[in-house]
Length: 142
Image (cartoon, rainbow, N blue to C red; front, side, top):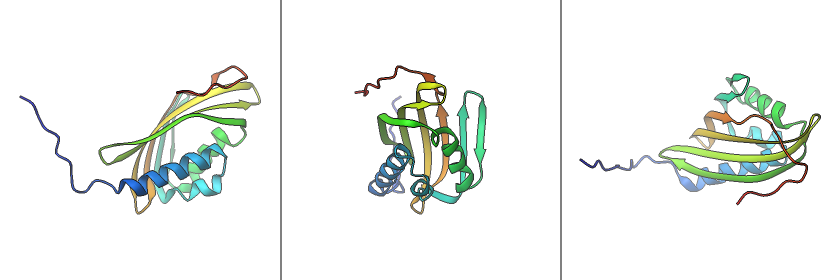
């Protein structure tokens, strides 16, 4: 028996969410943590599964603290690929960066699933590849 998928009339305003996704990805790629803060609700629920374990934050300042810790000291940060789309009412962000840290060239990819409320990310769950060794010359993904 085939089951149909009913679309809820309460689906998010996609254009506003796409603008938020673009702002988030642009701010992260230029390490503008002040602008990135504006993407989050003040009391955002933030969880990230990274190779050492789970990282959590209960507000925008703590969430930005994790992003700053991961990306703030990176030099030559290059966005290789990104996408923003929807899984029903959740905003999905995916991004891959090539960067240089103190221990050399690396690549990292993260997938984030977000609940957006009142124009800000109210809940973000991230799955992270970790920082992986990479060649010094980045190549853009298709």
